[in-house]
Length: 353
Image (cartoon, rainbow, N blue to C red; front, top):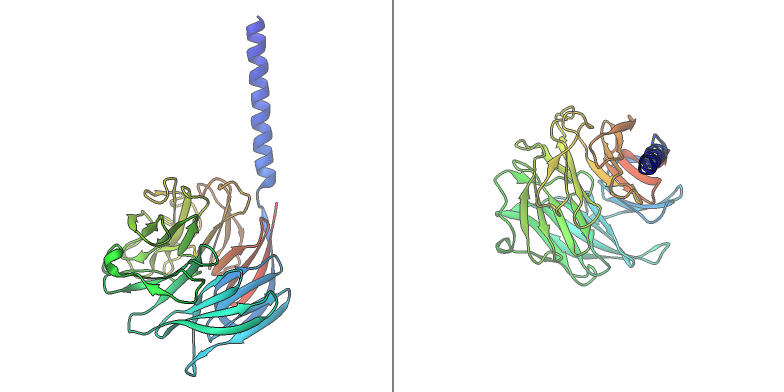
C-alpha cells in the first residue's frame, strides 16, 4: 500500500508539473505584435542592423543608407562615379559600418562611426563584371568578416576580410564546392549567411537549395542538399539562422508563387549536414526572413515575408500568424523588440504575450 500511495503521489506531482509547464509555455508565447513606423521613404530596404531597441542601421537602394536614432534619421547618399548604388548587404562592428552594393560595380564601403556620428567613409573593395551580384555580409568579430554573391565561373562568390574590413580577398573556386547550373542566392534580407562560433553557413536557391558550411571562418568548405523547394528561378532558401553550432533553420519557398507551402521550412540538429522539412503544407507562405527569438531556448522563432508575420514555439513544427503586415527583413534588438523593413518603410516591432 505504501508503494502504491507513493506511486500515486509521484504521478500526481508529475502531472501538475506538466500542466504548469504547458501553462507557462502558453503564457510566454507571442500572441500579437505592435508595429510602429519609424522611417518612411521611397526606398526598397533589404538590410537592417540594430544597435539597441532605439537605434537601427539600414541599407537601401538609390544609394541610401543611414542610422535611425529614435525617430531621427541620419542619412547618407553614396555615389560611385556619379552612379547611385543599390545596397542590400550591411554589417556592423564595434568600430565601423559596412555596406556592399549588389551588381556591377559592386562596391564595399567602410564607414567609421564614433558612437553617434559617421567619421569617414572608405572604399575597401570594388568588383566589376557582367555576373557580379552580391547578396549578404556578416562579421564573426571585429576582424573577420565575409560577404557572398551569385556564382561567377563555377562557384559561389565569397570574399573574406581578416583585418577589420580594411582589405578583402576572394576565395578561389578551387577551394569552394562547385555550383550547379542555375544555382544562385537571394538578396532578400541580408540573411542567407549565418555565423556561430567559427562556423559560417551560406544558403542557395534557384536550381538547387543547398547549404555551404565552413567550420573555420571560411578556410575549408562542404556543401549539403536540403529539401526546400527549388528548381525554378525564384525558388530556394531565402534566409538561414542558427541557434547554436548544431541547431538551425532555413526558410524560403517561391517568391513568385507565394501561396505555396509544401517545402518552405527545414531544420537541422547536426550543424547543417542533414535537413528535415517542418510544417509542410501547414506553415507560413513564402518567407524572406527568419530569426530565433533571443532567450527563446532555440524553440521560438519569427518568420516574416510579404504576406505577414508568423510565430512558432516548437522549432517550426506549428505556426500561428500574428500580423498580416508584410516586410522583407526582421532583426531582433532584444527578446521582445525588433525592427522590420520593406518597401518604403522601417518599423519598430514590439511582440506581446
